[in-house]
Amino acid sequence: MLECRVRIFEYVHIVIERLNDAKNYIDDFKSARETFETIGNNADDQVFVKFIPNENGSKVLCLSESKAQKESGIDQKRLERFLLGFNKIADRVKNKTLRDVNKVNIALGRLISQYPSIARHYEIITDTESDKPKVTSISLKEKDSLNNKSSLYGCYVISTNHKDLTAKEIWDLYMTLAKVENAFRSLKSELGLRPIHHQKTNRVIAHLFISVLAYHLLSAIEFELAKSGDKRRWKTIREVLLSHQRSTIIFTDNKEQIHHIRTSSLPEPEQKVIYEALNIKDKLKRKHRVIGTL
Image 1 (cartoon, one colour):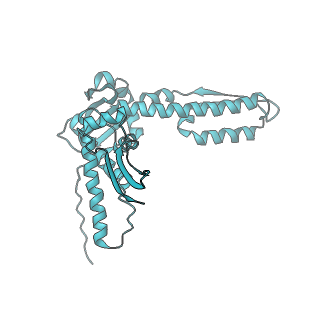
Image 2 (cartoon, one colour):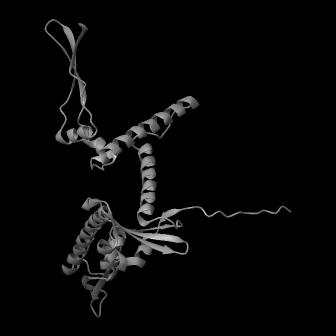
Image 3 (tube, rainbow, N blue to C red):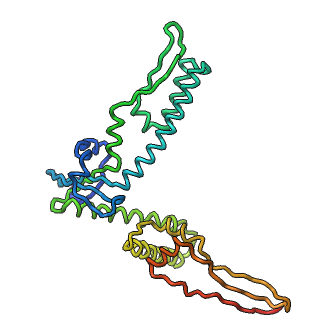
């Protein structure tokens, strides 16, 4: 019999805990803006962090202003759609076009399945006739959990077995992981790393090389823009710059000579801001050539 021995290594890790774990620190998060350490000077991008040591390492409570605004906006839209759908069902019940208990429950069930993250914070009260299975009215009652949910917008907990790092250092390390994830996302989407249709090894290597080279250029552009306070990702930058193009105009004059005019469109104000931040000057002047005759 062979004896197998397994050695367990304790790897250094930094992970984000589930939202349920953030709920355990809801009292801390409610006063985060006054009591936590602040990272960043821009009010919209500020992050508030708090270091909590434990026997296995440490935890860092984080509240991101930009993340809070994004989550709040998403939930607000979901809430508006949920209330709109509920009011439509309530109006049908009031107008007596929908009264059967089973049919009302089916309609409410569909609505709840569409917006489960919102519906769980409301109690639906159904009033029925005493002697018939007919619904007379329906209403909503907010649960206490709704206030707790809004208190956790932008909140997350970083867990690590690092024991000698500060809250800011742990947060910086986590953000480098986010940058790696963004890099793979960019490679797979905007930079066309996949799919690879080549059959020969050298062509596959060339394809990968060009994609990685393009990412270095992309990363350099984002880095230079970030120094000027512009933290947009490449996807957004690309969309802004798409309308600035270089075109070729081809026409024939009365002497039957064929003319090619190569010219660039005028950059828009937002495009000029990006070019100035990158110290780019348009050296592609207007070129006019006669390439032959008919």
